[in-house]
Length: 115
Image (tube, rainbow, N blue to C red):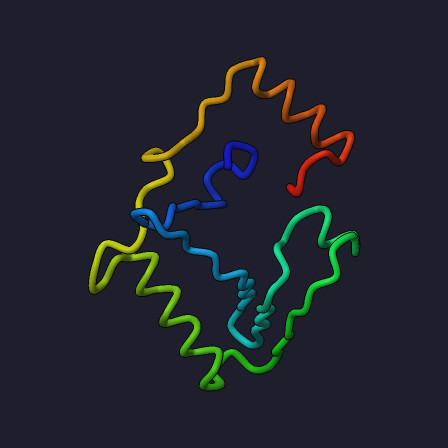
């Protein structure tokens, strides 16, 4: 977020004991849109084909029904139209210690984790 100079925005899904785990990627501009959704996590391991999971890709004009419905769903969650769905990033921002950062970097370099 810092490197994007404010162009990337992050919100947390407001949950209790459950998780919000949609595994959906939605890319849209004025003309076209793409939805990638399914079982796969968008992690380094999955993107490098280390976990074999299934997704579906739907591409087409941004004004098609499936694209406008997904956009409306996203907008409803992001802006909290009917309920408190999402919370600001600062609410659960994780300030890692230097030790936690070192452990993360070692785990990531050695592929000891799933992220």
